[in-house]
Image (cartoon, rainbow, N blue to C red; front, side, top):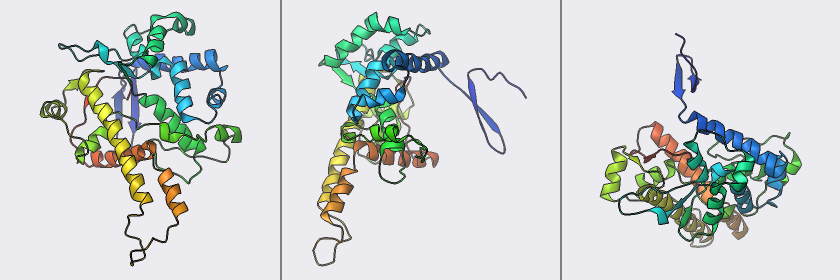
Length: 304
């Protein structure tokens, strides 16, 4: 049977082909076009030139993405919350989505949306998450900049000898510890599953009942912010345990283990919100496929 494939993608196996409808296709197209326009306008069309401007700083790279591409501007202004609604304006990209059209690079320079972004960067009432910007930089680092052996990330990436050395050098970020976890739906889901995060009864009823939460509302923001804080605490605790060498591989006489202090420091340095996120996300995927997780929160957004 033939069917209209517009707005759909397919996943084929030996037994069947499953069609998935892509929601918000005009928004997806606009965001893709935005990447090309942003590269052309701000970086002479070169992704390498864009990354090189950060001088091997992951934090600066995230900032460059945010300034170059409005669709990455994942923030919430809590000043817009009131007693009758928990919805807050989140981003320039979301605000333009309703129109369905793609803003030109020139329009972005003078639009109220750009002025909103400049104001948001210095506002004390704005909460910034930047999930997609941070995970983009983390995936670039994992694929091209990380010196360690192959690692499990949210994406299956592999470094080959064909990668340009200059690209790899500028992707060896020196401050990955400044990148937070990527707060979407899976990480808070597994953190709740293992009782690291606990919801109020009201919020638990909404999440377990698969009720769609308001984008940028207090419920969604609380879950995402709680996820960031929880992962930072996990990172701190894991580093403490490594550096204290509190493990089962000591010499049996109360002395230090066979691992040198230098090895332990290197191991602790590799623990970050990014690497913990990778572990939690992969663990969550496995548990979800086995139907062992409670429902995750649901929100209609372009930032996950």
